[in-house]
Image: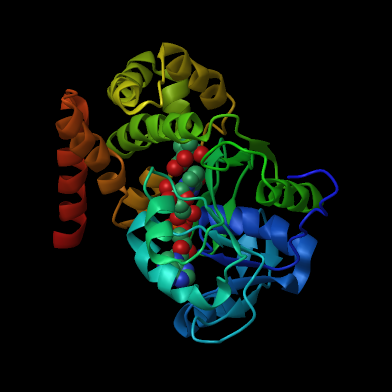
Amino acid sequence: MKAGEKLKKIETVSLIGLGAVGSAYGSKLHDGLKDSLQVVASKERIQRYENTGIVVNGQDYHFQYITPEIKREPADLVIFAVKNADLAQAIQDVQHHIGPDTIILSLLNGISSEGEIESVCENQHILYSVCVKIDAVRQQNETNFSSLGWIEYGEKDNSKSENVLAVQELFERVGIPYKISEDILHSMWWKFMVNVGINQTSAVLKAPYKVFQSVPSAYKWAESTMREVVALSQKIGANLTEEDVASFRPILHNMSPNGKTSMLQDVEAGRKTEVEYLAGTVIKLGGEYGVPTAINEQLYRIIHIMEDMTTQH
Ligand SMILES: NC(=O)C1=CN([C@@H]2O[C@H](COP(=O)(O)OP(=O)(O)OC[C@H]3O[C@@H](n4cnc5c(N)ncnc54)[C@H](OP(=O)(O)O)[C@@H]3O)[C@@H](O)[C@H]2O)C=CC1
Ligand SMILES: CC(C)(CO)C(=O)C(=O)O
């Protein structure tokens, strides 16, 4: 941002996806912005949310809902918090909220959602982001978390642009913990490495965080899975190292012992998992760059079998 320029202020926010992550951060945005936060959802979803209510850490939330077809002024900020498989539909559903100046944040795991949004939306204001250390668990309409962790975000070129500063001001105002990344490619790949390691092994072992906190062989397996991402990252220029693998250990040990990764939550709820965006991506990139991905290949297979067992029984 140039000296003398006025800071852009985010007044209106539209959120799509009111699950574990969306309702956890959405509760903070609602507390701070009231009805200037709008939640985009179909009529059927809204009816469900209004019938059951949305409960976050024991508190009832009544969000301002809006259906996708309603035309309105673009929002200052649009936040995506759906699962990867629902992203294409969510992009369509939120079209009326995105204008040429709207800032966009995608809280999805994996390394592809920003590119997917960019390829569809005529918008030059997509910031890259990941959420770190949040331990939100959702059961139907109820979300509980002991830590919101933080949202780590930044421009593709790591500049402290006016959009980065506007989001910082919003996060300060509503109390969402954040970090502005010094190297967003590294941050995205670090989070990808964590999810590839812990989400997939926890789903297969049906293990909450306490298992990885107390059973060394379980954590060793998760770390071996992460190391395939480390090897890939070196080919791609994200340059993760053994230090990055080690840096997740203290974070894991501080997470709620009964907390569960989003993939374990999917398995327990009988939902399709995000394995395509984790092991699926690792295997594809491994093929392109000549990096062995044997552990991810096995996980990919097992998690698909688990999904088939749910749908066929
Ligand atoms: N859970 C966690 O702790 C963490 C999750 N993540 C990542 O965040 C993303 C979201 O995960 P999570 O919150 O766990 O997922 P959930 O499944 O809990 O929530 C996703 C929500 O999106 C809603 N949704 C899907 N499509 C639409 C649509 N077109 N319009 C409106 N709402 C829609 C779903 O609605 P409905 O329920 O009505 O179908 C659901 O409430 C994932 O990529 C995940 O990997 C990242 C960090 C931590
Ligand atoms: C890092 C972790 C495991 C918790 O925030 C996550 O991203 C997930 O559950 O998907």
